[in-house]
Length: 289
Image (cartoon, rainbow, N blue to C red; front, side, top):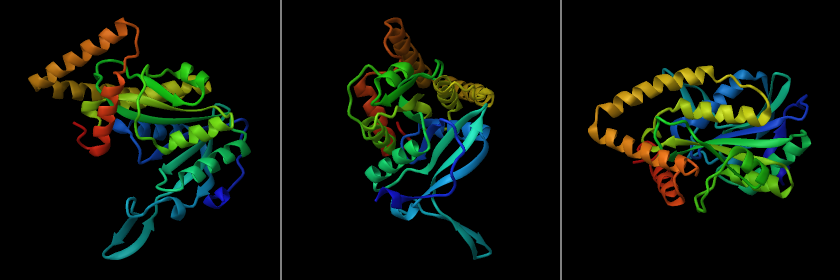
């Protein structure tokens, strides 16, 4: 049954590739994961589609409507939500990229299909990216943590020292399926300041790409993201400086994070704070709080 969810377009000539995952529709505070994925794909060459998934089976078009192109009332075409795996190479390293819309249905079958394909293509590890809103300040380095069923990856990337229950995305389903078949899989999460979660946050993207570089032994270029992050930080500084309440909030966040750093705990708040920010973001991504 999982085979019916996709069609093989081409056989990638890939040696021990890493499968990178970014599916739109789940938590992505500051669009950090989307910016990171665009940066990575932009550095791969050539990028060719190798697998196309059955969007009719996986996507609810009422929640992800196709885009209609009109020219003086004439419908020139529809652009449908897509889910695909593409292949690209950088510095003699091969990458497969799972990208597109997060499926609305058949998650178990989808996760099984993704891991089946990963095994077929000789994938060495599966790495996803995401970003969550967190009560942390933009004046401190972006922290990257992980979710995984693989203890070695969790320790290599870092993690929250918490126990919590939060809604899951399809990345988690893929991680669980991969773990059941002893394939290393994890998702990297950037902690984005909750007060900028509705605007682009390139610093979060830079942190994700840098963390991925360390895991795949390839130096992705983060210079453009770093410059964009510097410009964005100056803009946020100006916005904060214009409001005394924002200045007070920022000082409190800085003190909180610095205190946690001093005690050598993760620079990410406790489970209750994280769950509150994530749930607020899910209720209204454009105005988390």
